[in-house]
Length: 455
Image 1 (tube, helix red, strand yellow):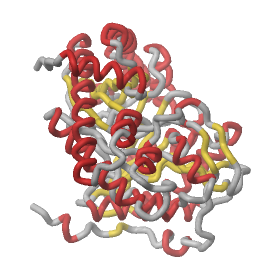
Image 2 (cartoon, helix red, strand yellow):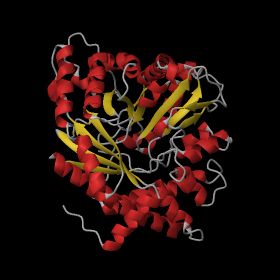
Image 3 (cartoon, one colour):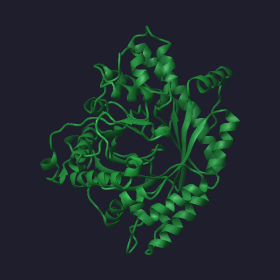
Image 4 (tube, helix red, strand yellow):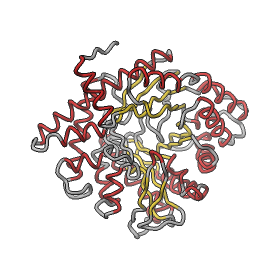
């Protein structure tokens, strides 16, 4: 389906790219590994490596070619694969760390910076493959550079698997300890989900769902700077008018994303999947979701009114994207990763933004508690309780929520952690001192809400 642009649209897009930090944040190739099963774990590892390197051989080069031809920055080229808990389940004696290393070697060979899918879906219980995957997570993340992992522990239909929640609290602590020389960096590659989508192109939570085709191209577009320009250019607009202006901006960004995505899919000879229009910030000045909220009139993000402002922004972005493309998917909304947003970092360091306020904001935005550093002595039970709270928000509101939290070994409240690159700087945030241990240790499954009975 061709997309036709008017000359003035082209000029406007050039301005967005040159001045407002508009970019294609990622082109992510989804690859099914369901045909890589085998009773022998080493054979599975080889099949995984061979298939990824064959399918994604031209991904990076084609992404760079499109970027040069169209003049649009394509920041990341990435891969998402079938959840490895499923792929390795037929193995008789499975050490899934071997599979993580095969993924890492393949990602290095084809030149992508991240590969997602070292994942499991355990919202209703554990299979043998899930157990193998969870056991391998800390070591798999510690001994690889490019591998990202995710675990879905809840859905609106199934409820919350509290045994999995507790398990993830322990896994996050172990992962932090194994990567303590890098300030617990392994935890930055691990996401715990409720209602995980199968077509998300953004790391660290991307995987290739079982309902997806053999291969697919999904695109993640990011334009906080463009939206910020729109808001700052209309300081007197009422909220209805402002929402319309943001929708119009999101419409233009999404059209550009679909154009690039379809062109990449065409050249790679695979189907085009979705455009994920998520306002994904970076530590760069002018590329901040927090700045957008403050441009609406808040003195500081985290103050009263922040949740309402974020709700308007998220809704307007989704509406604009849905008008621009029939294939908007993934997460699509406003991300609020603390360490990856210059405005969020500043607000957290000044005490304006706390964990409780971030949790409230996740009720109305895309995803959840993201890239949050907490003291290294935070217990596994407390981390599990934070995950449970966030999963409850997702379950009740029928939305995707997630937790990417980093208990930084040796760090305390007020310290700073430098992760570098797009991962940015994390101020270590305070948590409640009260124990959740007895609550978490009950185990079992929190039942699905009444609204799950929707058939």
